[in-house]
Image (tube, rainbow, N blue to C red; front, side, top):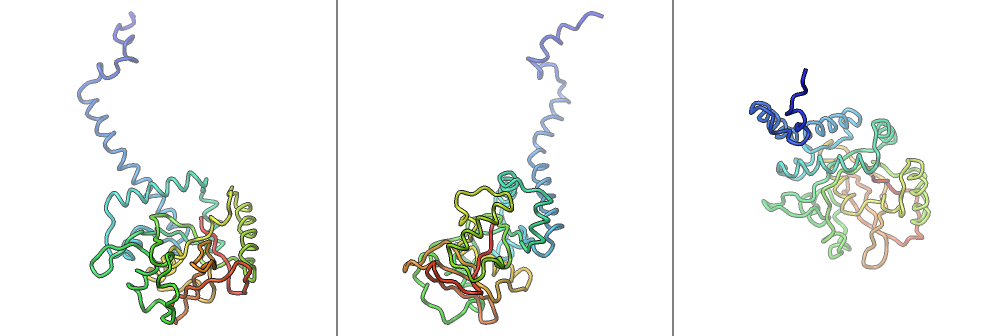
Length: 267
């Protein structure tokens, strides 16, 4: 049987030989791909909820904490951030199950929230204005500190230990850094600076209050998480001790150590 002449050109002019029905079908599939990609990522989030249970705070919880629904663009950004985190950190179900056993939570962070009908940045100052009953009232030392008034929270998906590492208790800041370095090595994380595993003061405040809002539970109720952020006097800020008196913010020099002062690794 003679070889059809048009087959010679098919690799070069593929569309030329497609019927209108074929073209329409392929166009429909192409338009559906982004939606299918979103659905696949949503399934990943469902898998996270399956693994972490009450310790997974997804988009719905973040929306309630922010006081407004996310736009479709914001939702897509969250999905993209998760996909990027999975790729960059080589996350697997096995690793996530290990982190769950080690007391980690996964949380979608929101950079803005509603405050008195206005959308504002999630800073410690604004969190305190929105939730005055959840902060320790006898603290005004940080009212004009940049870490409280200017430093906000980025839209991220945090994988954070809910309570401090036991081995980081009664260790000064530099000793904690070595502990974080060892922790990263044990979890196959290559870091030039292990202190990137420390949260900022605003992130700690956000995570504690968001978890309390979503689950009506207190984390870091008797302990402090030490950050890598310095106040204007040069001390390193720590946040926590979220008991019935409210969330506290303090700080000290890097040589300081105490049994309730540690660090919560954050990926």
